[in-house]
View (spheres, helix red, strand yellow):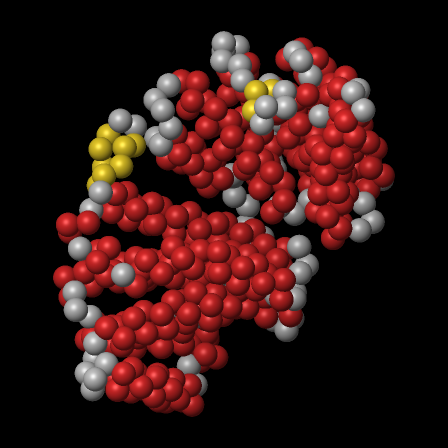
Length: 432
C-alpha cells in the first residue's frame, strides 16, 4: 500500500511510541476517575467528560498542529525542499491536515469510543459523531488555512494566531457545548427552516452547510498551496465561492429582487475586503497584468487578476441595480443613508489605501495603518465636523452623510480619484 508521502512523513513525526503508549494511559486515568464518580459504571459523567475532552483535543490541540504543520516548514527552512518534491497541492493539503493531527485524532477516537459505551442515547450517536467530527475537521482545516495565510505575509510566529483561535473557541464555546447534549440529535427534536420558500429540515440544512463549509475551506487550502508551489490557476474557485455565498445566503432573506441584490452586493463587498487582505501584493504583478492585457493574452490576465478586483467587479452590477430602485432608507437614526454606488466607491477607496501602504517601505504595517485611516475617515473626522454643525464637511469625508445620492457619489468619486492617483505614483516608483 502506497501512502501519501507527506501524510506518512507527518505520521512518523507525530506518532512516536511514547505518545502512542502514553496517551491511552493518561486518558484511562481520567476515565477511571469518571467511572468511580458514576458509581462504578460508565454513565452520564463519563459520556460528558469524553465529549468535552474530544472538543478540547480536536479544537485546540488539533488546530495548533494543523497550523504549525506549514509554519514550521518555513521556520525550519525546509519548505523549499517540499516545493521541489513531486507532490501536488492536493496531496500536500490532506497529507498535512490529517497527518499533523493524527495524534490528536488518535486520542479523540478513544474519547468517542468511551462516549459510545457510556451514552444513554445510542440512537443519537451517528448524528452526534457526524457533527463532532465534521466540526473538528472544519476548525482544523481553518487552522491550516490561517497558517498558509500567515506564511504568505511573512508571519512565522503563531502566538497571535493562536490567541485568535483561543478567543474564537471561547466565543463559540456555548454553541459547541450543544454537541454534548445528545437530546439534540434525537428525531423528535428536528425543526424546519425556510430557504427560497422551501421548507427544509433544520438538521439536513445544518449537515449540508457543514459539508459545504468544509469543502470550501479545503478548496482554499488547495489553492493557496498551489500558489505556493508556483502553479498558475484561473480564479474559478474564488468566483465559485462568491456565487455560492450569494445563492446560499440569498435563500434566507425575503424573496424579492431588491433583497437578493442587497445580499449579493453585501457579499461581494465583504469578499472584496477579504481578497485584498489575504492576497500577496507585488507591484510587478500589476505590471505583468497590464503587459498581458496589451498582448491580449486573456488566460494570463485571468491568472494574474487580483481576487479583490474580481469581487469588486461582481458587486458593481448589483450596486447599479440597487441605485435605481425606489427603496430608500436611513439607519441608526442619524441620517446615514444607503447609497449603493457611493458605498462601492468607498470599498474601492479603502482597498486603494491598503495597497498604498502595501507598496510602501513597511508593508507589514499596511493593515494597522489602513485601520487608522478607516477610523479617521469613517468616525473621527466626520463626527468632529458633525458635532460643530458642519454636516456638509462631514459628508466630504464620509459621503453617506450627504442628503442626496448625487452629492454622495461626487464626494466618493473625488476621494477615489485622489487615493488612486497617490497609489499610481507609488506603484510607478516601485517598478521603476
